[in-house]
Amino acid sequence: YTTVIADACARFKRMQGYDVMFLTGSDEHGLKIARNAEKAGLTPQAFVDKVVGEFKDLWAKLNISYDKFIRTTDENHVKTAEFVFNKLHENYDYRLRSRRLLPRNPRIRQRGSPPYCTKTAETLYFLWGP
Image (cartoon, rainbow, N blue to C red):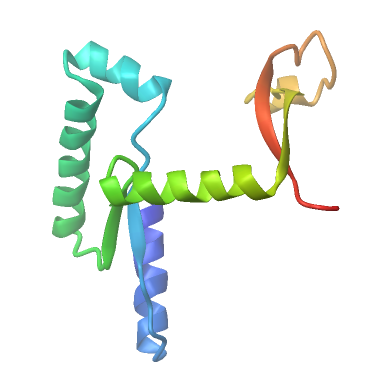
């Protein structure tokens, strides 16, 4: 549904005379992709190729007006991401830190601290200041 909303915004801005570049795409990595691909009996790449095809077909039927479709598995995207992260690695200080993950259920989240919020994740933090 977010692509439909973004399409409406892009069309509105174009009607107002703005030069609009409407980018959309697919995030094609992660454990969820791997698990769903395995369930479907496909490789992760074959699975996302199938899903992206289905989305593009749907968006064509809805006449979605995107200018570029970006896939995180596209060679250009991979090279650009590697370039950006290499530059960050070369030029900025960073630390791997543990952070507490909040439950998705708001009723549990409102209860606050452990034992309700016991999951943690390692997260890379870039330190931008001097």
